[in-house]
Length: 325
Image 1 (tube, helix red, strand yellow):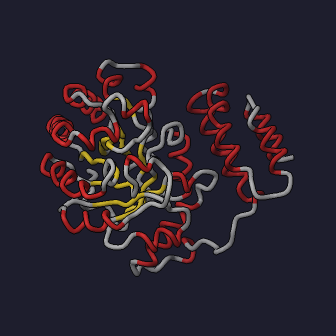
Image 2 (tube, one colour; image 1 turned 180 degrees about the vertical axis):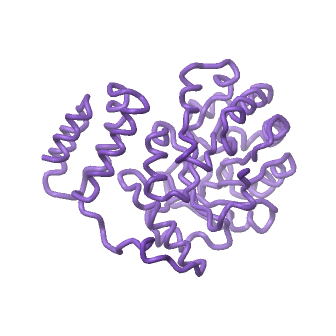
């Protein structure tokens, strides 16, 4: 069935695209915990895709039996490269393309990518139009409230909607805020009143209660850093929002309202390691798992010592021996 932001089940719960985090192993773990979550790739360079960069092409790999709907996030500033990259993404079977117009990293912005496009609305609209023109799958945009003011959000997004954007995910901070201070969702709610496409809110969701409190008139929520060391939050967010919308949960769907013990988490952590090794090989897979292992291991006696050991592991067997000791 063809994916559409307009017809996908509400409320939408999405895993935010995060560089160095939302690779195939993490996406598949999240889908194992909460199958209804919409997952995105790490952001990928349209320049690299247009020129067939091997490393970037490998990052497009996904498991269609688990990861759908599967959204590929891209960044760049050249319309001709967006056009070529979009064709490649569609041919590989992705369900949608998302354009990053919100990353505040200095290296990204200095290249006129990410949040820099907030200051170039005409170019931003041209990128959307070029992508929409070249594919039949939906094209969405993830951005921020603005550069140094949230007053530009609505006109910016309306311009992108006119260019063909099918949905928006808005992080509740301006570029100048980076990731400091508290996310402000007020203008995101106003945006929803002013556009005819789905709007998803993002920023500071660290619990199911946060999601219920913040969703307001929006079509869904997106969770990013709140999943670090706690991918199980996605199951709780999905269930809490379903209950809020009046959908009764089956007994089998209901999650116990208690904190998981570390012992209960170990099978999931090992599964994450196994996925990483299967997809990327043991050397690279376990190297990249170190940051996840560090975030998983916390909040219990002996966690610090275990964490110190896990951030040096090179083989899956080592991690398993430490976790199960």
